[in-house]
Length: 525
Image (tube, rainbow, N blue to C red):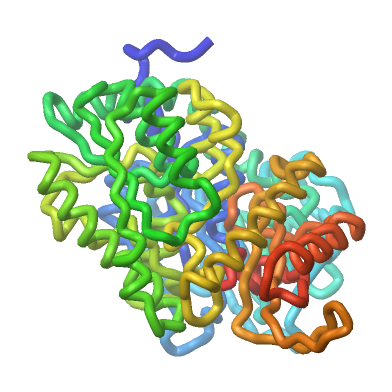
């Protein structure tokens, strides 16, 4: 049974918080996902967060992430040494463990050979952290330094063939460290290790539940907005759709959604949004046709980041104009997710890097002087989907594959024109049709076409051709932070190629992208 509304509060949902301090690891968000999968709330904060701020958060436990640097570097990113005196359980992962060792007067040294990939863990000491971990469990290593001497009061509890110290602990100070990454799927005992830390050591309860969150979010919106009116930028994607429904349930007709047709949409995208939200959900929806305006500003622009900026800025212009026309609003609703926030913000330029710009994180509120309503800001994509299902959105919307805010513009490498958009739309439509026919749509995180900025020689109808290349991208993922390329059946790939080349004028070659994330991204731009 869901918790009653009276029992739901910020304190209830957040009092069991695990704090993750980010030192720049590519796996930091994986840590957060694993903690939340255990039904415990957690947040990622920069490793530069002050001791006073950490105390204010009152976390039940702290996890120090990995990172690309070495604690031995002159400008190594460290933390306040007093962190280790707070009496809060601490788990250091990879760089985090080396940081603990270095700052508490142990000795870290460069390894003769960098260790990257799978290793077999040898458990040599009883430990609360290692409870239930089988000997010779597979773990995932990614490091260039080794611990040679432990700080006073610490003991080694496990090792591998290449890492004589792979797990450490000081039970008195409640400080633990792992040289490997328990947050990645390649570590077979990772869930056990993290559960041991969260529940056995930090003494957390399972209280981060979507059924509780739905009621809490609606009540929180009511409290925040009061009698005010809210604008919502609606794209028809999962995030903005969930936000619109939550706010509609909270304040009814005081919500107005704006859908901007930027000319960069897929086939029939606009019509589907109008039908769902006007006819089915009876939500106030304003549709703006701004296709010519967007395409005009994109003319001759090939740089991907410039495309994103142009699209984001033009969206702001159109949105502002339409907002003024519609009347006075006090609030702006956005489908901002937690990964959007983290990917778009880098502390002092590092150690984490800005991956790409998200036009719904920053800019628009500042320019419009509206108060933000972002009910999904703490959630990952799969959590947003669960929340949408909880509030009654149909599976056809909940399971909709992510579609980028800049639309097809970042799936066209090079210049964006009406002709190239037509080619991509037709190819993309075929891919989605065939994916759904094969009953693979809900099994894939994303599947789409990319139009490349090259032409190749071909032979069609005994004649030489020199035409475009379409790349197909299909990946599996749980949260979009990491992804594997989908091992689609050869027969399906052949069907893609056959239909696209035969049905889409201007294409004579189809290729398949077999890159994972990392090192690639899911989108090509």
